[in-house]
Length: 337
Image 1 (cartoon, rainbow, N blue to C red):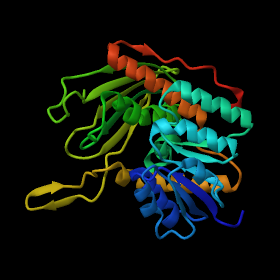
Image 2 (cartoon, rainbow, N blue to C red; image 1 turned 90 degrees about the vertical axis):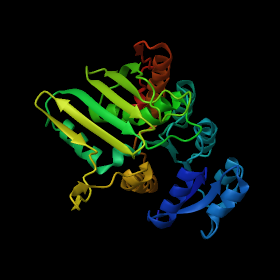
Image 3 (cartoon, rainbow, N blue to C red; image 1 turned 135 degrees about the vertical axis):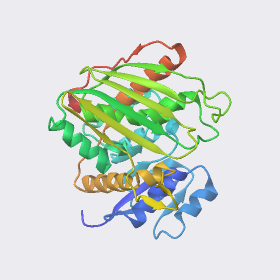
């Protein structure tokens, strides 16, 4: 393929609009052929100034638009399943922002539909796999540089949560990233989840149980602990430390410029995930476009989206009951081996 890959972007909220900008200005070999969003004014505004970009309020119309050869789904999670199935019906490759679907049952339906097509079409937007520091840690673990892994210690902090954020979303929208990162870094499945809740922070909105400590157990005997704190007040931090039998390694400390002046020292704490993981998002979309132009799917796929959904469901159950909750996965199909 020598012409740019024509992409339909479904959802033009904050994430979708950022992907439109990325495809239009950052990623070579691709163009935004269509955008869709229920908000008619917003979708027209996002499409304005992009040559040949059609705007729709109906995602199905965007998929059917002339020149559309692939789909990037950035709409809210409950809309993903319908969009994925419609893309599969047209044989269109998809990059779907997490979650693949909000629940494991929906992810299973997507998995079955992809298998009926007979080839992989979907990649899930777990962008941490494309972050340079995470890739360094993955390479170190794969090479045995720390010996057999024993622990992953993770911190995931946001300055403040949106007004619509719920206690369940601490798992489904935030810790789900640590779930996928742990599975990928270790090459193991998560088998059980326990959630511990201290007294809620005074900065947390009423009714939101924040922060929490989430403990994941894996099929290889590794324990993963995740501090999730979405109203920490001071910035955005994602830290992961791997501890093995012969060493440890930590990423995410944010070693930016250090300033010493006026008897003080300090540096910047980024305030947003789009800043901390900007390069990862760029690299993710760039590699998806490159693979799609070759007729391949190379990133985290539908099985990974299903596994993350199943772990998240167990995590929400653990939040509610306070009990250690096993994760139930169907046997992995050979299609996804």
